[in-house]
Picture 1 (cartoon, rainbow, N blue to C red):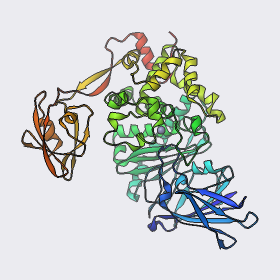
Picture 2 (tube, helix red, strand yellow):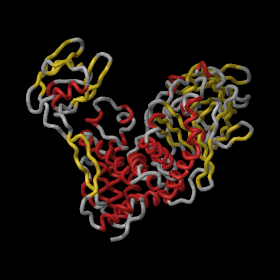
Picture 3 (tube, rainbow, N blue to C red):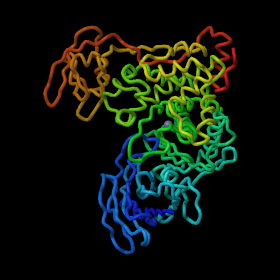
Picture 4 (tube, rainbow, N blue to C red):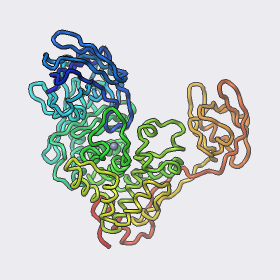
Length: 575
Ligand SMILES: [Zn+2]
């Protein structure tokens, strides 16, 4: 048994005081702080926020030897008393995978807080907290007399902590208790939640039940489920856990109809992760190495398939219309078609390189990479429509993998995935690896046509310079320069100040758009490192700006029937 105590009683310091007590097994104990949180594929070096580490035994301070930036070893007496490990963690980063403590609330991602002790990974853990007066802590762990119990370290680290003077809200999904705890950054903003409470809870229940229907199960995988919601001015994100999720959402967006639907999609996405990626998990994440980044070639399945299916769930829950789904799908498909990086990075590479590319995206990323969320969702769409031609569906593959792997905690390999798809459509045994490893696009138009839809290209109203400007305090600057585009050929670099075009001073983004002339040389004056330069820019004719998803005018009954079944994620009818 390892005992962890967290003291949040000095929130104005933003420091969490941690104490861990354990009986030593050997004369040497290795301690290491995780480098990342599962679900968020970036080495975050949480250790940079840890301070004042001390280990004591029988009233004596033991000598620590540092092995790595985030690992120590300590010599101790295995026949002596308990080891007491004390340190503090600075909690000032408000995201779903970092820690934040102030006078209003505390949120802890425990991978950033709890040291992994050698030999204690599979021991049970007990956790207790000291909180400011009037606060309560919420964790997705069984609790009795103020002590939370975790089966092992993974169970503990998979349990986010939210604490504050919060009023939890309750709802049930097929009889399973669910709790919603919201921190809205101020007492006034919690009004929003209270006013909408019955409707919101009912909508959440319906979306969660739609996830269960999709998975073909009678109840959620968790026996208790906690939703932690941080409402902020602007923001979007979520992190999945076995029995909980942490969501961050822009409160102003919740007031808009599209914004509320996207919020329900985010809930559905994280809820579906209860199966896909948490319990139905790639072999490379079974078990999790908290210190080294594992290469996971099938992240596209974990995130792309979930991102594709989450768009259907508000509709199948009866909370949105098919037109809304077309809008959402078209937005993804537009972004995909307008990402040049899809001709550089394969879907498999995108998954494998998550640690160093998607999570470290910069102004040049769109030209060199494609997100495994985005392309994963596009390939998921094609897989779904491909399987539907022979009476199957993506949903059925997911269910089958749940029964063969997820339910038993058996990690799946890429070969297992391909085999599952090929069971329903044998040609996918060769086709799917091609979609994963090669750069050619699937026949998107053909697949959309099978459900009576097509992508309609919308042209931009101004000439194309391959240049995205951004208005900054110092003036208009180049935020993105498309590889091979007119601006790049002219010599523009990201960060250049865009001063004037054909002697017209550029002060706003509109100034630039208005001054562009297609297929004729123009003089662009830029400033780089305080020096003015004159460049020759030759904008091209207007290009496709976005695609919308439209219904084929003379769709056949077969197309319409397939569309209806696909929209409601019902099994396809055999032709
Ligand atoms: Zn996800």
